[in-house]
Image (cartoon, rainbow, N blue to C red; front, side, top):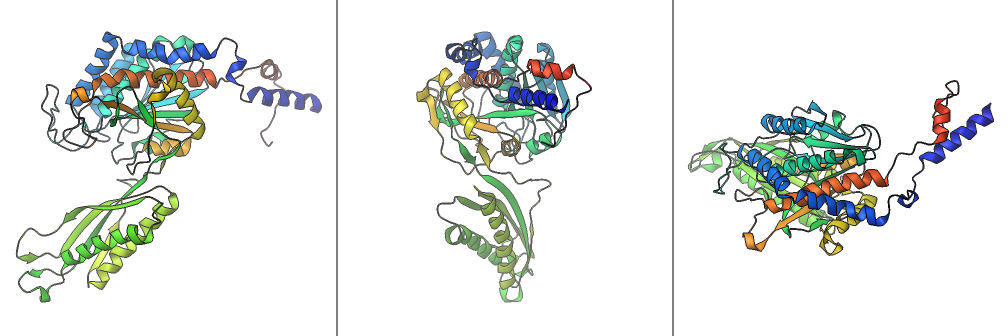
Length: 453
């Protein structure tokens, strides 16, 4: 019986090998190319676009910070309930993971982040933030609206899906590492690939921008307390000035970039926090500084982290102070490099090209910004791209994290349609095969195979 078992096993392994899409005679190139166009036409229907715009504006008026997105999550779940889409909640405190399709493999994911920023909105309009000191200044309200738009379209065509689309509504992208907590909670269990987007004022509406390989930097935060000896500012010789020490530290940290880093290996250190005394004539006992560091490789990132601590502590010692450096990774986890899968890049170019035209697929230069989507791309093949929304006729659109940030709501149908198209075609072009050989194995319970091969 052993030789027969080997025959069955070989047949099964062969059946699981990837098959070219052309092997399915019903999936002609023309039919595949039509899918993104159909989704875009659907998303541009006035009733669909207006519905997405309404959702986006509700979320914009009621911004919530990372892991506090309870009302946003409630709105998402209410819309999913109306569509009849099942979901898991809570995932990573406020996250939602929904499922459209067969409920079985293959699985592909599309993601939106939900959190706002702790800043005051300066845009005067009807739907301005109603919460003092909080604003959707990075477009996450639009991201949620577009993913819900994709959910609606996918649910309409759920019987055509050859697998399951996993919808990831994720909390706390803005520094809280919500993606990592979603991963730890099993949100991507059995998922083969994941796609995500970000609105961009740097590119015209109707265009997208991306690149294969690293696209966004690894990111970390640090804080340092430099302790000296306070005293009267008129007699500094009797004090040990932590402000002067901190100033020297900041200058010397920049030498790590200009004199230690390879000029062809992009790295950044920025000190953005400096807190000291409150009087004009008193040298304080201590100073607190803090900032961010970025790099495009694990090695460079680790080296920067080590040298930041060394420079701060040793420079403080030279100035007769002492310093403590804190990398609070529990509250502010380090983000890895966001790296786009090479195979998914070619796939993205095909799908987006069919929808928008190849002339509107732009190459994105790597950015020193960071994204916790990087946790997903570390775990499974992933792809992150930028959705253009610039339109000169509507005035200047500021970049993210500006109090004057605005969304071009005409971009919503493009993002929703791209989400739906990428997921649908991925399932069609990466089918899970079930052959007669597998059925025969299932009918022979006494024949058990092990995976030691």
